[in-house]
Structures are given as C-alpha cells and as structure tokens.
Image 1: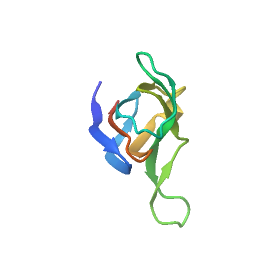
Image 2: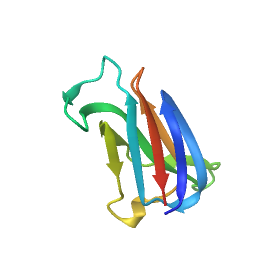
Image 3: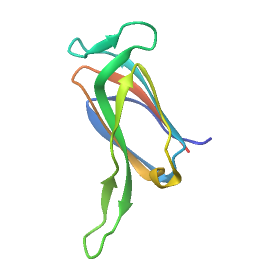
Image 4: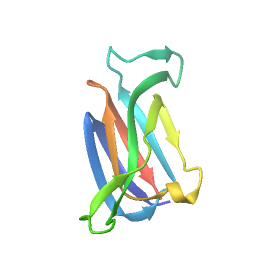
Length: 112
C-alpha cells in the first residue's frame, strides 16, 4: 500500500495528493477536548462524532470551472478510527478534507 496522506490534523483543513484509488483511512485521535461525548471510556474509546473527514475529487462538470467535489463524510466515532470503501466507486480521490471539534487533535493516514 502506498501512503497518500500521513499528517497531524486539528480544526478544519484539507490535503491533496495525486489521483488514486483509496484503500483505507485511519485516524488516531490524540487529543480529546472536554466537550467531547465519550461514550465508552475503556480502551479504544467510543466517541460521539468528534469530527469527520471526506474524500474529494477534482472535476469539471459541464461549463462550470474545475472544482473539488466531496463525497459523504465519515464520522470519527472511535479514538482509533478505521474506514475502508464499500465499493471501488467510493475510493477515487485526490483530496481529503476534515473538521474536528475545537480542541480535538489527531493523526490521519490515507492509503491507496
């Protein structure tokens, strides 16, 4: 597997990479703010929507200028969160975008 994104995340942001089929994404939440709803405080904490990320693709539709179109967000619900596409059509991307609760921090890895 090739690593497309491997970086710290907080607040909101985006990262771009070459056009690729995404095989998986993982987020390790490294900082949980006091406002987060921790459902299960045991190992691999169950969180309630501490943030989300979404894959995006640069495309031109009709006569509209080129733009980045994003798919459905994946909600980050675990301290160690994992995502893999249901089918190949969900995995084509060249960007990833995220938004975390204020004070939340994490590490995002996207692989092809």
